[in-house]
Structure formats: structure tokens, C-alpha cells
Amino acid sequence: MYQPVQLSEDIFYIGVNDRRTELFENMWPLPRGVAYNSYLINDDKVALLDTVEIGQVEKFLKKIHAVIGDKPVDYLVINHMEPDHAGSVNIIRQLYPDMQIVGNKKTLPMVEGFFGITENLVEVKEGDELDLGKHKLQFYLAPMVHWPETMVTYEQTQKILFSADAFGSFGTLDGGVFDDEMDFLWFHDEMRRYYSNIVGKYGSPVQKALEKLSALDIKMIAATHGPIIRSHIPEVLKMYDDWSSHKTQEGVVVAFASMYGNTEEMAEVTARAIAEQGIRDIRIYDVSKTHSSYIISDIFKYKALVLASPTYSNELHPNMEALVNKLKHMAVKDHYLGVLGSFTWAGTAAKRLKEFGEDLKWEIIGSPVEEKHALKKQKYDECRKLGEAIAIKLKDDREG
Ligand code: FEO
Image 1 (cartoon, protein in one colour):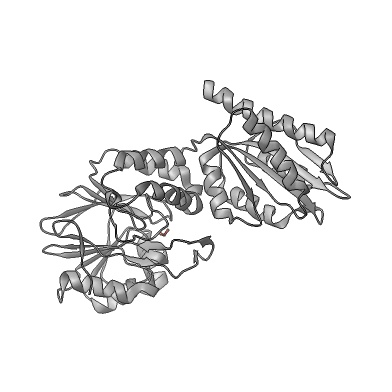
Image 2 (cartoon, helix red, strand yellow; image 1 turned 90 degrees about the vertical axis):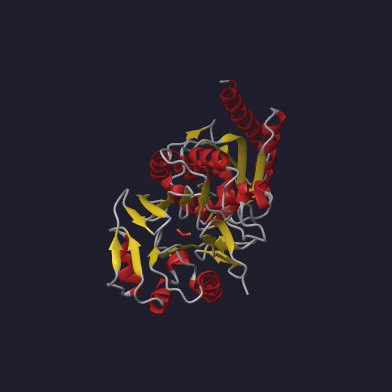
């Protein structure tokens, strides 16, 4: 028995929480689960906005029934085809065979490709409207936020933006569904982790979408993950603007791989020198312990990064290799990079890490420090010098 949650008259949240899945996209950890949000407008015509991941379909159907009973669904608007939202499309279509599926010219071939559905499809273009009775929907394309077919739907009467993945977050909705019903601060980190892990590669399309949305009067943002936002809209728009334009805060992520502690020691010495210069936000991560999801999220937050790796079979330590590959794949921009390395008989790691920073056009600070065997006085001093140079660079930015 589900109690429907109302966004406003006739408009309902009918999303579900997933506390069982370990990894989102079979890759990103979900220690506090994830919500798949869907919405239902019970007007003269009934419109469903996105569905949920297939494993949650039973709960989802009960929620639909709790709102509309035996009334049919007239329209299913698909803002985004990734299966965490479109997973239940086929079942919904079987239950409501006359239902029109609404998408754009990139959505509809995916509907056919994933589900073999070729009938009762309505193609909409930028700015098109759909009249449900009291409520009118308008569609805006938002390609690559996060897939090419992604669009957002604006409900004109109540000024609600159904924003697909944009402004979404990891984490389940634990009783509170709206941002002012919970500790919304906690969601800031999970929102940035979601953005950086899932959408982070597409900063420029996000900027284009934000520019388009700036023309709309938005009273509520209803994303497909995370809280519905009605009390923190300017704050959330600013966060997205910053992340998508690669704006970062003063601070340093120090990510190291270390087999026996020698590289870790270099990371610690460097971090201490940074702190002594007055930089307060420093996060040291062992890439073999902390999932890259969290490290990447902090890299999106802070301007400077120190990468430290031993040479392993004439390459980077494989866990460091995995982190830098993900950062390359995401084309992360505008960072300062300090490089540390260590080796026992032939050094390659520092060279590789420097090349990685150069490939991404990051600013390499100082010279890479690479030690043979354990850390000794000369390289200790160089680690400290590197830390100081990074701190000075950050402080210069602070001052202007
Ligand atoms: Fe939440 Fe791109 O799917």
C-alpha cells in the first residue's frame, strides 16, 4: 500500500528506491543506494514521465495504480533511454497498449532497438508542446546530458522541470523526497559524485543545456535520481554551472598507489609541505583502497592533484593506471598536477604520470620527483619543494 507523494495538484512522484544494487552501471559504488524517480500527471490525459529500472517494476506498478486506479496511461514521455529509467518501458506498453510513447528523433530508434516497439510513437522537437488538459508539457532537447537522446520536460502550469539525469544524485530517498525534508547538505557530495562519475565528460553539453534552461521560470526540479529540489534551486544551478565549466575550489587531492609504503611516504611528505603553507583542504587517497568514484568526485572539487605511483612491471601500478584511464576517458580539465614516483630497478611511473597530465593539458607543477628504493634526504627535500610549489600556486590564485 503506497501513499502517493504530490509535487502539486495532479502531479505525483512515483519513484522507487534501490538499496540492493552494489554498483551503478555495474561500476560505481552505491553505499547508500540510488533512487529511480518517475512522475505521473493525472489530468484529463494521464502522462507518465520516465519509468524505473526493471528490477523495481512491481513496486512501480503498484504506485501507478495507487494514483490512477484503472484509468489508462495515455502518454509515456521518455526523457532518457538509459535502462535505469527506460527499463520498464516494455512492460508499461504491454499494460497500456494504446499509450503513446513520446520522444525525440534520437529516442524513438532506441525504443525500437531496445524493445522492438514501432507503433504509437510520437516524435517531438525542440519547444513542442503536449496538452494534457489543465497541464501543458513542453520539451527541450539536452543532448549528451547524459546520452544523445536526452531531453527535459517543462510543465508550464506549475513550472516544474523534469530534468532527467541533470541535477540527479546517488543515495535513496529515505522518507524525505523534497530537498527541504532532509539534510540536503549530505546530498551535495553525492550529487557531485553522480555528476562527475556519470555526466562529467559532457561539461560543454551541460553548459548549453543550462543556458537554454535559464530562459525558463523554474519552481521545482524533478530529476530522475535524488531529491526533488524546490528550496535550493539557485544553489543547485550554481553547482552544476561550476562543475560543468570545470570551476574548482582551493584544495589538493593526493592519490597514491603503494605496495610497501615507500610511495605513500612521498605522498605524506608532500601533503605535509602543502599543509604547512596554509592549504586546508587536502585529501589523501590510496587508490587500492578507495574506489575511484570518490577520488574522481574530489578531483572535480579541488584544483590540484598529486599522483604518486611505483613502477610496476615497467608501467604504472595497475590501480593507478585504472584511475588515470578513467580521468582520461572523462577528459577532466584545468588542474594543477604534481607527480611522484618510485622504483626498485627501472623507473617509468613518474614519466607516465607526467605524460598523462600533458595529454589532458593540465599544468605540471615543478618537476616530477622519482626515488629509487626508500625515500632519502635529497628526494625528501624535493617532495617538500613540490608541495610548497603547489601550495604557492593555489595561494596565488586565491589572491588573484
Ligand atoms: Fe540515470 Fe543516464 O541514467
